Length: 363
Image (cartoon, rainbow, N blue to C red):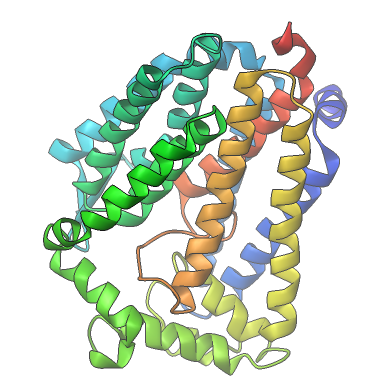
C-alpha cells in the first residue's frame, strides 16, 4: 500500500490534486451543514468519492496510449448505454436519464463527457495530416448522435455540455472561421424552429430567466429561492449549518444542482470568492498542463476536458444565480451524485496520465 502511494505521488500533479481535493472538501462541508438527512447524504457522497478515487488512481497509472487505442470502443459502449436509457431508463421528474443496476444508478450522459472528447481527439490524431472539411463534418456527425440521444431524455444542459466538448476539439483542430461564422448565422436564423421544438418546461425556464416573478410558484420558484439563498448569505454567510433556505426546505435540489446556493448562504461573499479562486486555479492548472503536451491527441483531449469542467462550473453557477435558464446541471466536485463525481475525478486522472506520458505519446 505504501509503495502504491509513493508511486502515485510521483505520477500526480500535486497542485492540481490539491486544488481538486480542496473543492471536494468544501462540497462535503456544505453537504454536512444541512439538517435534512445529511448523514445518509454524506455517507453516500464519501462512497462516491472513494469510487471516483479508485478510478482516478487506475487512470493515473494507465498508459494513455491504451485510451487512444480503445477510444472508439469506449465511445460505442457509452453510446450503447445511452441508447438503453431510451428503452429501459429510470424515470425521475419526467425525465429518463439513469440506468438502474441494483442499488447503483448510472447516468450514461455523464460518461459521454469523457468518451466523446476521447473519440473526437482520436479522430483528429489519426488523420492529423489529412484534416479537411470532410473530416470536420464527420466529427460533427459523431457529436450529433449522443447529443440527440441526450436531448430525447430530455436533458438540455448535459447535451449542450457534450456538444461543447466535441465542437471545441473541432475548433482547436483548425476549422475555418468562415464555417464557424456561417454556423452561428444559421443557428440564429433557425432560432424560431428551435423554439417551437423546445419542451414546454424549457420554454418556461427561458421566460422565467428573464423575469422569474412571472410564475413565482411554478417555473420561477427554483430561481427565486436560489437568489434569496445567495443574497441572504451577505458578506460572511449565516454560518455552517445555519442556512434557512436549505434547512426549511425552501430550496429545491439543494444537494445536487443548487449546492452553490447552499454554500453561498452559509459562507457568504467571502466564501464565494474562495471557491471562485479555487475553480479558476483548477482550470488554469489544466491549461498549463495542456500547453506542455507534445501530441495532437493529448493537447486536444486535455483542453476539451478542461473546458468541459469549466463550462459545467460556469453554467451551474450562472443557473443558480438567475443568469441563464435552469438546465439541471451538477456543479463538478461539489454536487451530490455518483456518476458526476466519478466522471469529474476520472477527467482529472486522464489529464494527469497524459501529462505523465506526454513524451511517450509524442513518440
